[in-house]
Image (tube, rainbow, N blue to C red; front, side, top):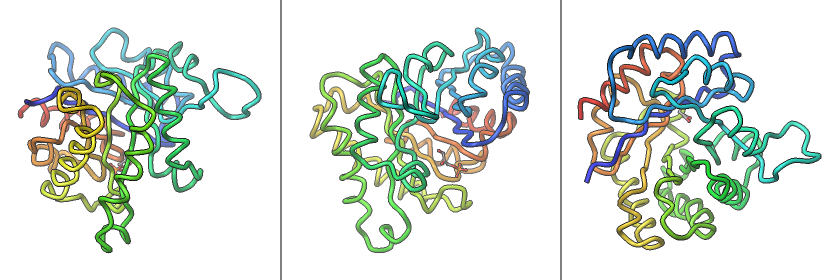
Length: 255
Ligand code: 13P
């Protein structure tokens, strides 16, 4: 069964409102009069979400956020809640990106709490997992991903397939130009599918999308996306230009 692709851009700390609006407008223009089967999503910085949502208008492009807090409101300086994100038109939230785990010390338990909050509040969580280079080299990469996955799975039950997306992002492939080979990606995605199976049973596990992230580009997207357990991409650098993001979306459409 081929799942509906999710082609998601993570703009990280790039593109303030005016630049964001420009890229989003170019994306809509590039697909004017054409439709696509995949879901296409852009996750800009918080302050640029309204500009991107406005530029997308009622096109098929969706907006999401890169992070969220676990509380609804209160004295949490610098944080943003699920309700605030919903109000700006977000449908998805990335949680547990490796940059948040590394630079902001987010533990697997906190990531799990955020994922649960996002899902309970009716948004869709894109939960990132992935090993660093030393873990890949030491051969412990599956254990690392299992620990990250289990923390999240322990907070989820029932059919969450519409609201729960996993993104496998090997840290050594992020922003480095080095991509996991399609075989390495499929191998880990298949392993993640096994973990989903054990937790949810096959009916739900088969519907959950597993994205690949880490130097996905127009020239390697089709090869990665054609693997049976690669259900989309979480794209950093190449999502910051309307042309390259569109080419990756086209690659998905060609499969
Ligand atoms: P790059 O595509 O720039 O490697 O970034 C991947 C990523 O971290 C997406 O979340």
